Length: 185
Length: 185
DNA sequence: AATTCTATGATTAGCCA
DNA sequence: TTGGCTAATCATAGAAT
Image 1 (cartoon, rainbow over the protein chains, first blue to last red):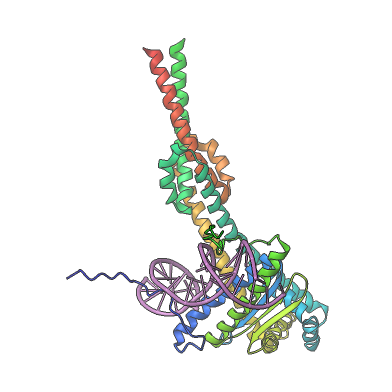
Image 2 (image 1 turned 180 degrees about the vertical axis):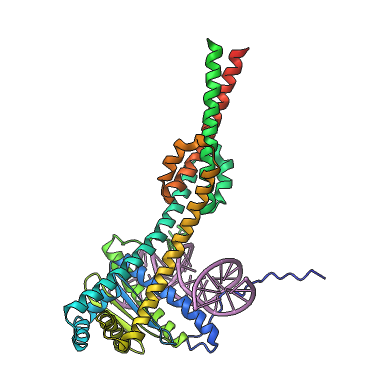
């Protein structure tokens, strides 16, 4: 009997107690997801409220992760104004080391900014398309429906192809118009 | 009387864009609530995954807040030396900072991977477009040149708009053709 | 290890006290 | 400023890839 109605492919989110997850694997997956979620919250808090926020995370394996807006170091340096200088001095370094550290941090921050910019741009692009659809003429509805399902890559190809089609149509329209004028003479 | 059936005592949560909240008061309220929420997330991540997590927040007014598990100090003390390692490594100090430097490089690498993934996606899209151009009719060259300069966002809007233009052009072509036929009679 | 999908639990925007 | 309320939005556990 193939009747079996497997309605529930997912149990959905289950309530859990906040205590160490026993399963090694589940703990790792949870760590990845929640770390990402935490960093997103950091970003949102900073942007929404114009605050400076930083988070530092050490995985159980000892790997370090950090995220901050405007930058982790800027915030930690502010939180512990003398920390960097103290450590630098303890290592027997002067201003030279500070500059290198600053440069690394700058690059790090720039990368993060680029990434965020890429994602933001993608969002805006989707938004722009949605808006265009909204005000598009009803006559284009048939195409609109198909357009709706196109991915970014497909859309690029589509737009290029459409350019040719449009050119062909324009050329044909011109040709027809010419003929019409010729007939008129 | 108590006629008014004020069904909606609350609009419930409204969707908001992640950008600076203009209202001074709303921003302050949001800051308090989300700061608490962030700290709760920090605690949950630490407990659930056996990780060490710390968050430092500066309100727009400059007031500092911090939270960490097991403690902010323990985590920053562990993290800051890794920052110092950058300086050490940059100054050629050697093995002492290698492990911490590796951590930083790993984060750096992760960011680059994400960024490259984004760019790869973009490249694939542009490649697809290039291919379409290659097999496209030479007649489309004029539009091709303009198309070449469009960014992703503009192209999305362009494609949507072009759908309308195409419809209009088709309609116009049809109209012209009709007139030509009429003249021919 | 990171991502994807679904169903559901968790968080919070807008209002008030 | 902190806290409660309600209705949505958001985040994510579990399963599979």
